[in-house]
Image 1 (cartoon, each protein chain N blue to C red):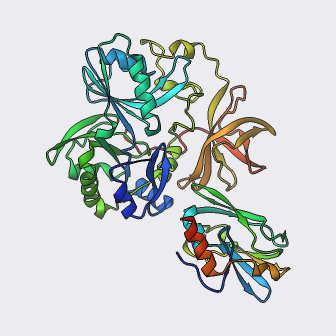
Image 2 (image 1 turned 90 degrees about the vertical axis):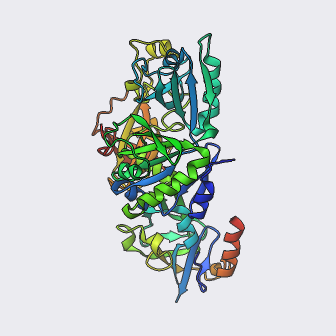
Image 3 (image 1 turned 180 degrees about the vertical axis):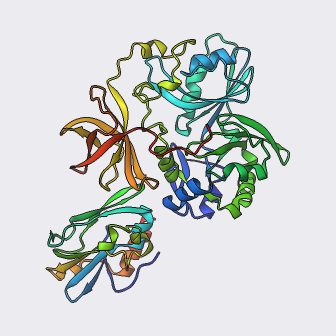
Length: 361
Length: 128
């Protein structure tokens, strides 16, 4: 089992540790609700060092990455970030990822921890004569996310970066003789940044951020609250909405599948796709929480499955995301039910996100 | 972890306090800690007949869900009305204000099979 360089800190802070994607990670510190309040009202700090970093460089880097991912990054500027999906030839999702344009011949892909090895193998074997080099540098970097309305201000005290750094853009910042990559991205729906730092300096940076944020209520936040925050914000999670049986169209990610303008792996399959299911979101009328794998029913007939569910502290209600048969035209407001331990629990369909995001857009 | 003397404990992490043939039932400090923030407690109706070792309700936390098992057989006399609006009481006061149900014990011998605080603590430590 792998551990991030911050593992001893988490244990010393009293975090509960769980296994996640082959890593031992903090699932909670003070408690999910307290951590949720910190992130939505002030700021939370997350260790996301388990995520993978793959560098693609060389004269053909842009063309290669553009063939690898469904989003069109042909015009992605130096300093900009794009969310995308990486598909196999059948249009199934290998992973979802962020693409960073580090320069005309250099791109950074930040991928899910549980998929990092698979992704790197996939990427390496897709190089067909292009003049590029793929390098897995996951072990070389730590990643710290600081999220919440006060997050940017706290980080700026430690590593000065332009206050007007735009959403889905990044910059490099000098910090005590090393270079940080400060990216205005996140997975919570709040304003905030994610900071990439060399592994050997990650714990020192974490301590500096904690110190800088202590008067503003910066709180360490674990995987449990990360899941609640991303569900409230309508973000997909690999292993839930996405996996190797899911295509990005059915998963509601058409906005990062650009059919015009570039060829990418899986494009022909996606062009011919007739989705058999679609992603929906719903709010429970009762208090039981829908959990992954529970069945969805409409008029008593089983027609789908829950992929993610939680209690939303903002709405004070349980909410869920799932897949439902494409032939069910379930508009927002229509009713369905979730089979919760043999009982049909009523819910109503709604649009994502569940809550209005606080991010700069 | 708190584990008061004088209570009966189950290996499913419920506690019971026996007074004049009535058992007040809740979940242990260890259980609430493992569950994390409790957001809903589903309890039986007053008058329901319970059997020892069988589920009588459900406790939902943000990250997981767990059945509640009755430490004894008998009729439900009362449920904690405050848990409907303040389920977090189970976290903040598991042995007091976070109690769940009161049961009329139909067979006092069943209580003899339950664990003492000392035995329960040994059991919990064996799980770690």
